[in-house]
Image (tube, rainbow, N blue to C red; front, top):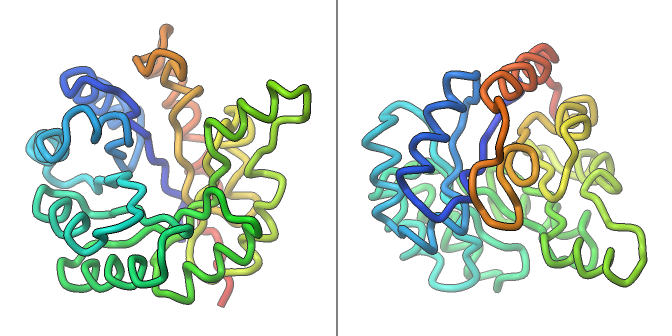
Length: 234
């Protein structure tokens, strides 16, 4: 499949999110993500506003679902999301009902392995339960907490190749990637590249970062799209 660039709108204001989304799409971004901070701040209203403004663009609702999976997925689908996120650490039944909601409402399910003791096994389990994509994710708090102890900050790049090799579905790496690491993801066989904090968003205040983001994003998108087709495991 061809590489896909997704921007995570980890903002708490829908007007700023809409402005950032428009800029990102001009720069060549393919998918929009209603990030967890935006969903907490604006809820279904925020997803509806994104859908109204960008009727033909895929929208990922980063719900990080842990329970009540069918209803959450249904609500986001009706609001205009095309993708929802369920956590590997949720109960098996939660993942199953989110997958069922995906089939019923024609949306895709992204399974997130954040917090799994065995990240590779967690990714495989998500695929086995029917998730359409795997998010290989090292969390914000985890990274900061480990770094505060004077230890090396973990990165999703550490096990990205192992996760890609373990599953057949497309993989996305998330969690403190540098620009260079994000651009390199397709070379590991991970075609879904998400850009967010700290690439384009101020991670500490959850607002749009300063600088000429549009030009920077355009260069990043061009480099990622230049990989061409990424072969997935058959």
